[in-house]
Length: 260
Length: 348
Image (cartoon, rainbow over all chains, first blue to last red):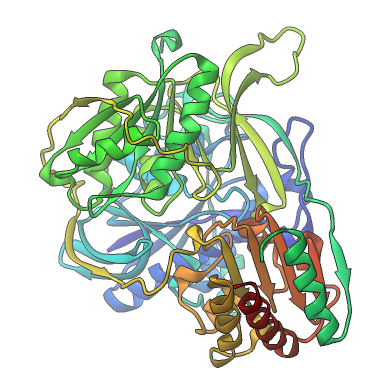
């Protein structure tokens, strides 16, 4: 079995957020991590590899620096790493990103593609389903449990008040949630090997069946009109009183607001 | 793409088990405002099996027109047939705006539909308005009018961005549940119903549903509650949620919780408020023993009145609370319950 896992290097939101003058993210200026949902997707792939035998390829689109997450993936147990990087791919929205990744994945053989549900920087949850659409394969998002049965996958998928047990014929794309599993740590030997391993680097010319008009900032249907730090509502009152006075205080406020 | 051909505001009227989801009515409410600004109508797209009778409810909440896609293949939500339904509606009717709820269903369906019809999709919007793009004129660049400006939080609520989709139609957005307001119900309102079936032939993209397991909802949906008594890590145990339940009972409120309480196994996921839970905006939100991680704030800071009780005076919840009480919840909450019980009895 061949599994492709899409991973993304994302800014660690604890490190603060910086913008370019055009409103897009200044990714070069922020600390980075492997996106948590993607890491869960990678872990799921590695477990399938252990259970059924599989070749796991990690792929990412990003700046040359994104090679770091591929090495991390390989140190966890991925067999190959592919970096898709090219100046013309910059500033992509989810449409252009999914076109790029689909164009890259068309070079590969795959039974299963696993992506994270969403990245912590954009929170859109769009790229996985959009890749599946471009490749013309089924998608099962928010996977809770993944099993392989013959030429199909059996997946539990959570909705608000229910879950579905779904069966999809492979090839198929699955999106994973960080809650799916507890990703393993890199092993010292794995880290050593991963830093010697060769990373495949692809650019625009390596993408299959994708038009220029669907790539990068120019190929992005959505455009940023305005971006800013969030303005929160003003701080209200804060009191430190003994318990009885605290109760008096709350009761008075509830009466003031005609709640009681 | 001839953008001028695309007219009207369409919303996906999500239903589950032949019951209209709250988000469908919220989208109609918002869609109606946008349609008014554009001088057009709001159309609800109702997709399912045997769902025709739901059209009246959509009309009562403001839909001018209902497009009904009814087929046995659409009984339970599945990505492919629902994508086919919406993409076919878009191809045939050419709406300028198409709104979908940012529910588990909508966040699966929206991206697939936008990719099929080749347009942009803005996820998890918390504000929608009609305006100009660019917002301020830029020399040498045409300023387009009557554009949908879609505002959404990103980075777990650290930033907000306003997005436009000037060159493609429809302008698509998923909209966070609980943020837009339903219109006032008018029982006498009627909508034009148009049936449309693009044909559903199963192929490899149709997944098979082997089993549907429903969890039984024991409590009121926290998104509908007027008062929420919400607990977090500071409550310390499942048993100790009893003091919150007592308070909720006296106030006629509903108990909810933070992610920490779910992760600790004290409360079920459907009571979770926050970015990975539900967005709520009750009249009163009690945040009890909740520190106020940014992901939690994203789900509750639109509440009318926020009352926070926390022993840590530096907890970020105090930054959004209207009334913050630094103190021990184990002492304050039971005392508050007792006092309220006395107060409310006197009033009766």
